[in-house]
Length: 78
Image (cartoon, rainbow, N blue to C red; front, side):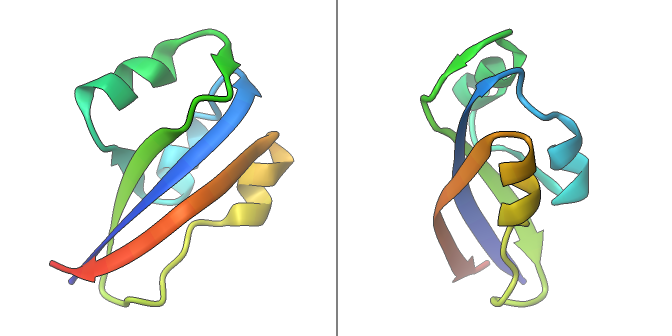
């Protein structure tokens, strides 16, 4: 099992459906509260996903379709 952490940043409402789509969740309480803000200023939100493969990556193109970018993708054995 692998844990993958990554950051997303963008403006406007957070695309909540991406949590379901990428099977991920906020890294901390602060990140969770940031999701609830109506408007984001570009401050990154750190997310976590679990995978059976170290090759898993968030769907960057789908995030981009909502105006959000993905960065700092890191995987490690859990």
